[in-house]
Length: 262
Image 1 (cartoon, rainbow, N blue to C red):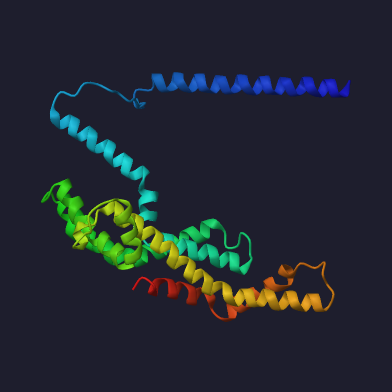
Image 2 (image 1 turned 90 degrees about the vertical axis):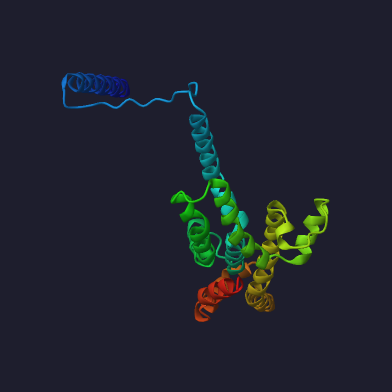
């Protein structure tokens, strides 16, 4: 009987709460409708017929802008230093064996700010040569794109290996380019990304070596003492962390990463 009474009381409380909420909503709507000083905005999306070519052009530009914004993360990964930095930081965390420390949010945030630092000279050139003249209406959007892509291409050419570039030139079945301007941007981006991945893994291999030595020493010591059931990672983790701290590891890793783009 006690459980039944409790259930009935609970249902009554829910009924009262729902009725009270409905009453508050109705009264609020009545007050807002009768109050002349309060304006309720109307939000709507309309699709109609364009009266002039300028309206069509503006609509297409808006759609293009929304598309670019949705692809902004992919563009950031493809044409900047973000790929190399985030891969190296991920390999560093695996070498330390700290699982989810630092968290993904911290690593991505650090990689983003390091990317902005490395790409600052390139962004400055894009702003001066393309973005600022376009905002001042001195050039059109096509010329702004052509001017703005030049500093980005220069950055990618400096970081791309000739072997990787030659691979994608061959795969695209295009004639051998005589100058850097003859290389299409999509070919350059593909070659740049695999070059960045190779460089990142090379740096990650160098980072792994000291931590691998510690793991081997700890594992050998545990086997010699007959402690086969104790996972070596539990013992080696504190030693790897203290080695990384004493060697000022973040200073060395970040400094090496930034200098690798020189």
